[in-house]
Length: 157
Image (cartoon, rainbow, N blue to C red; front, side, top):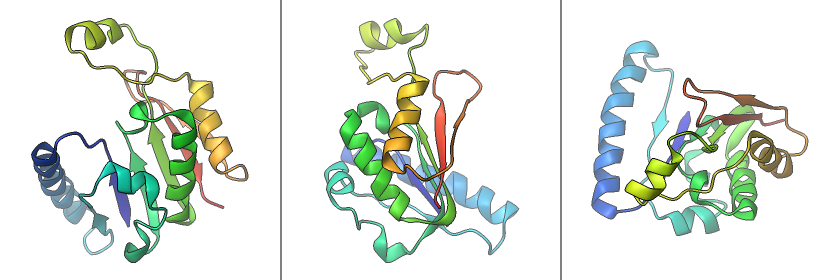
């Protein structure tokens, strides 16, 4: 199974984004992996996500947990705790992929013109979150094409 996490800001916008994501991903997954992959989409509050370590318990364990656009808003300690909680929902050998933006050339535009402020981390800080959350797990850094939003990958022991 695959668990996808993203930011939550506005109730109706979140439902629309989740519906859009479900439609796009479901059709691709069904075409490429018929009857092999279960997608789980959950519309819930960020407060519950951060406070309820058992939020995903009823869904079983996941092969892959993916988060992009969420950790950019979290304090370091919160990011470590959430990573640890997410890892509890992964199967042994399951992957946890978590992205966080690093400082980039268009940051000034985001902040000054869009009033969009994030918590930027260095690649070392991002890896440190993963190491602190799961000290015994293999970890590596993955880069996306722009280099502005690297991921750390943990493999749950």
